[in-house]
Length: 327
Ligand code: SAM
Ligand code: SF4
Image (tube, rainbow, N blue to C red; front, side, top):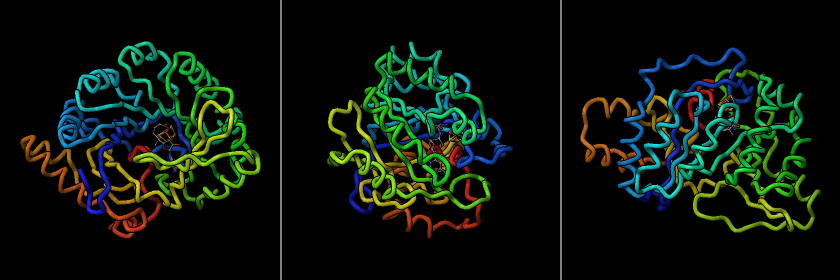
């Protein structure tokens, strides 16, 4: 499906829950956010229906995120349903890694091996300061087990000025010692009430740090839908990516549609939500009507994140928590 700017939209990201067991300060206030009642969340049947319809419209990639997706009851059941859909080339998950260890064998059986794991620091104290929880050892054990089991891991780290810039090189070094890709992400303002200013550390500064450490690095060509500037350090097993999520330099390659846990469609991370697909489905529409609605919604996709931000009717800060959007 093409949007109004001739971009092919074939990737859907679904937040399966707004709940989380960590409290990363760039994502949520310490006291958490008001959670939606469970009946407001898209049911697994509704999610599977959406995926089936989007598959018919040419969607080929799906990512489940949250909140913490493994916190939702029977999340593996949703993965099993999705693995049975014929249209998707790949099923991806973004997780904080605290709850997935016991699911590794089943994930492997289902062929779901593409996992983004969020680890913002390799220092236990900084990890605790950022996530406000004590799960560093558990997450690192999960990381090791996933690598051992041949999963294709991307490690996500939000880099913030004065917080964890000293982790950039140690995290990048994981791509040398392990077959994993590492992604450095600019902080965005979606923190649901964390009042201080962003601790923005720009993508260009991350590039400067990497260039200083790795003078021989090479920039890799980007592929369809890439949001990261991709870097190869000669001899390293994985690549390194820098995602200008706040600077928004990649919007021309965007191929995504986002669905929040309560069914709000976001045609861009920065818009305020353009339509509620849960209410539409619950009004009794047919699959044909649902498909037509998705076609209309894709055409609403703005040129870039700046245009999307301007279109928001709710401009009051704080903005919603990323655990509602899914990242
Ligand atoms: N709980 C899972 C996790 O942390 O991986 C999945 C949901 S989380 C919202 C998805 C991604 O969004 C994580 O990699 C997280 O670091 C990132 N994220 C959350 N809040 C962010 C913010 N304010 N700016 C940039 N990235 C953010
Ligand atoms: Fe939870 Fe992920 Fe948000 Fe951290 S970034 S609080 S792990 S949803």
